[in-house]
Image (cartoon, rainbow, N blue to C red; front, side, top):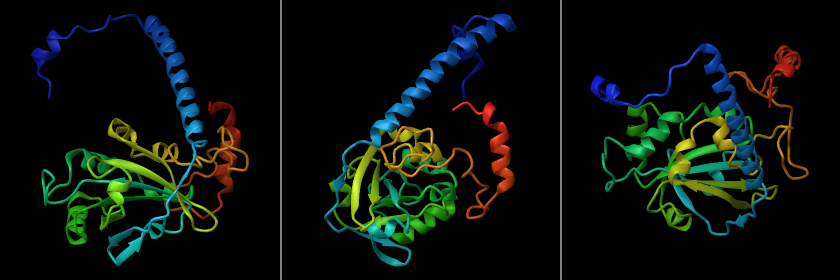
Length: 250
């Protein structure tokens, strides 16, 4: 925590009138909108990256036993797999996983919103399932599917020495492709629905997005639900969105 002495020594910005502050905010808003459009363009570029076919078979250990990479999709079309460091040579073992990985796990949002966009999120570590189950319960991470790496998956996908998110796609023949990956400071932004969807090949799947021809897209906002209401039609919510469209600035 900062001390009063540290705060007193800070070179603080100018204090201005309400009108001057509003003008400064409007100038900043222009820059922020430019950043948002740039971020959208970057996500559009990701959706056009080439894919790498995953031919090798990988085996993970889960709560119910051995599973394949395909199993980790859990029926979804897309998979975001985060390599979290939790094993005997990691600081904090066995009570804690890696400090940074743990901060990331604390940020993970309700996975049902990702499932609604055909996307699965899982964590994978070298730790045993027994230890992982204890860790998840103690840290409040029960909702995150967390598997044990048993082979060279981490080495093959660049996450044997450092954390990272690998993104995979399952086609109509259940063939798996690696489509993207992000690590280091890129991982700092992960944790919410939008950050995950923006690194997937299908994106947010909304009509305003710049996606290749034929990609699935629906009207923005209308697919949103309370997390316990997915799979149910909600005409009233659609009507709210229709009436508020003029106010929703994409």
